[in-house]
Image (cartoon, rainbow, N blue to C red; front, top):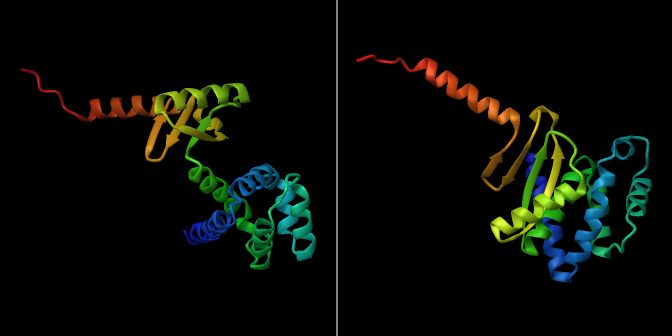
Amino acid sequence: MQSQTIVNSYSEAMIRLAKEKRIIEKVRNAATELIPILKLKEVQDFFDHPRIPLKARREVLTRFITTEIPVGFRNFLNLIFDRHRENLLLAIVERVRELSLTIKGYEIVELISACHLTNVRKDGIKKRLEEIWQTKVFLKYRQNPALIAGIIIRRGDLMIDGSLTGQLNDLKATMLEEVSVPHIDS
């Protein structure tokens, strides 16, 4: 829980600065470009390696981003390294992106699928959700093979479970309910 508090503190501070400097869009673009790179195991291992100097970590990080990096965002990333928060870097950058999208009127919706979905399929789901909910949607996608088949959609507290695992769990609960309730014959 403490790490989530740290993630929120850092990301909210960056968003306040981005609003003040009017660089929300540039910060979001840089964060969006950085996230898939930070998810790579090789990159995580590099940043976690104790023998790699701080200066080298900083330089490598900023070289990953091909879009224009606002000075404020570059300084923000350096601060994360200075404070030895590299282990939270991905979570902080993801939260920065989420907050910047929320400011632009997007609703963050999590899409979880049992198998890989193509970009065309994800875009189709996104467009349909935007039609239904009448709002701009940003999909956070991840794959979870434990679902067996289908998808789960999470929007705030709402969860739509269209997975086979969810349906099997519902069936199991219904069957257990029927078994545990004694029937009285008239």
